[in-house]
Length: 291
Image (cartoon, rainbow, N blue to C red; front, side):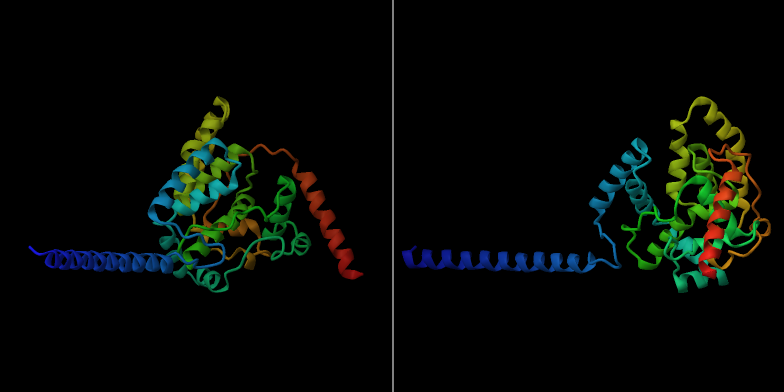
């Protein structure tokens, strides 16, 4: 074989290798471009994840949520990542009700900028709005502590998750439960029975391990039977347009939703103090309005 022939064959083989490499490079580039299109944020705050990232974050957030339940960011991340199969069902439940459809259309948010607390404080005692403000005063909390949704890919389903998260305190106020550990767990059992969210079930299944024996015994003896029975038979609370019901009588709301009071909880602040604080807020709001 001549040197020229060998050189020609070597050149042809090199050309074929280069063509193959170029084709592979174009295919890889196309895949990355396709991935880039899919992983563009679908809404403000959205963090797209691939299956590996989602799995890793799910395990990590579950561990952190168990180790430190005060890590609201990790609790929220776990809720986002495990809610996928349930959110379409909750959205469908909202679409089946006129009230729920209006919520999806308006997409209201719940925080101190969107809810006029002073106006609610002026409402008569016994209304839902007054009960909500009184509950906030009694528990020493605000509606501004809810983490935004980051890891739900569909924008409408992300809103459903955000809506659940921001309405959690309404469930507290309606049921008359404080924010201590056993009451939170009782409400998680209620939410799991009512809405079916995996995060609520996760908290209910493992959160009680942090309680003392006496508190755990009371939780399962008194609160859990109420939460499971009441939550499973009550109206799906994700469909309630709470902001349209501020002036409604809270006892009539409970009757409408099929909710009855839980066992008497332990409060850190007497109801009289909370009502006095709410009345003071109302007086200040009234004075400001008349000046």
